[in-house]
Length: 115
Image 1 (tube, rainbow, N blue to C red):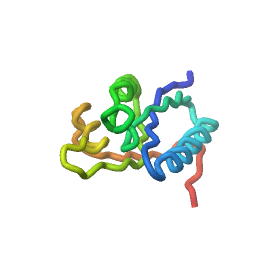
Image 2: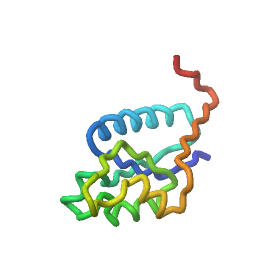
Image 3: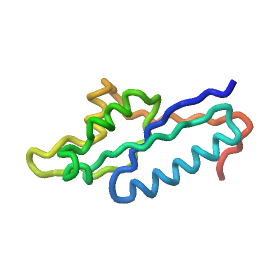
């Protein structure tokens, strides 16, 4: 039976949308040879959200993160002015009681290493 996972994608700011788009294409390609399927769900987060929502991590995005099994977060600008919100990464770590920024990597059966 094929396993299915919901994955939140937060493209972010600057080059974030470009690099997360490339990463999503890789994930989609991996599904063709792996025994799992991903349901990619996009959320809004980053500096550009402050003027729109008053925060860089809207509640709707937090709810998305609560129901998914993983999050692919693109680069995000952290404002430096006094009273500005904390970085999205720090906020996510605090919300979910995460203590490390772990980036695990596994090779998959029937796939070759990139050269």
